Length: 246
Ligand SMILES: [Zn+2]
Ligand SMILES: [Zn+2]
Image (cartoon, rainbow, N blue to C red; front, top):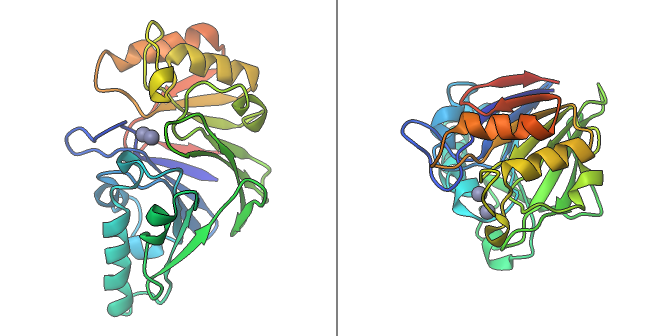
């Protein structure tokens, strides 16, 4: 499984970058976890848009789905130009029916509701979900390879939640939202501090951690050292285009 950081900012993208978006590739399968602002421009540095199978949305906040509409337009163009005949698959929860119903039209997209009880099978990947602690309904995702048994866990947006510990157990890579510094309190906003990320990573015995959903204040290297202080294994700050092979 190959994981590429397409965007890693929280809230809005800084110049020439993107908010939350990760490209997951295994064999012929190519899917995005979230599709934040700026993601479509960044994604084309890695693959052609027509190659993408689909997008799995964690929740309906703009920094996770702002580019979904234009990604859908790209598929309309590519199908119209006969570059592909495959609709874009969109996987999302339907706890907000209004948001779910507005995700796409039948000809160019295939919109599927996911839930906590039935994992999705996408190519060789098994994707399961767990609700997080966030002001609107949001799901963390676990992506398991049937080929290699490697496990990727993406917290999406969440305050520290003990229920995430078993969900993230022994992830080869834990993509953890790290929105606040150790001396702050992100819980009222539904986000984690660096200290809480260290706690989650340690308790779940994650093998490595990628810090994402980074804030627009302070110094990110401080976030990294704060996580390292409580978690003895590999910690990486997300950066545009960074690639991880699991
Ligand atoms: Zn967010
Ligand atoms: Zn959010």
